[in-house]
Image (tube, rainbow, N blue to C red):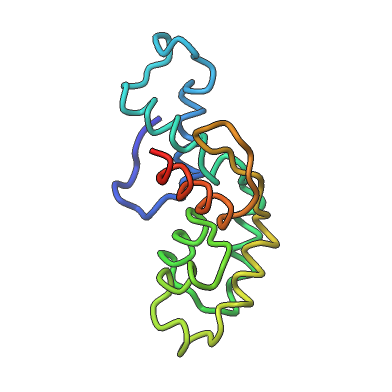
Length: 146
């Protein structure tokens, strides 16, 4: 694979994960056979646990098409795809002047949760929790116990 244009644009986490998979990161549990650096395996491991692992090229294209009425910048769209914010409070920092440009971010949050449904997330302790509120609450309890 050759790089034709350097810094041609931002990549979504899904695209980076897909690229690392294409280079053999997912097929090499020993971390010896694939032509990847240790840092690339660390990136792969991190992205495989993120929201990027549950995204598809089709869902990303659908989201980009449905965002056209909001006139978001490419960077804003990429940030939303990478973070998949489940609430207005989390989408506000991602979009510059959101109240002036879009008004309430509620419609955009609904679009995000429609195209990229929130799945169960696994915490460090191995327990499954749904949604960000439960995850935050569990982390606060773990911190209080320590």
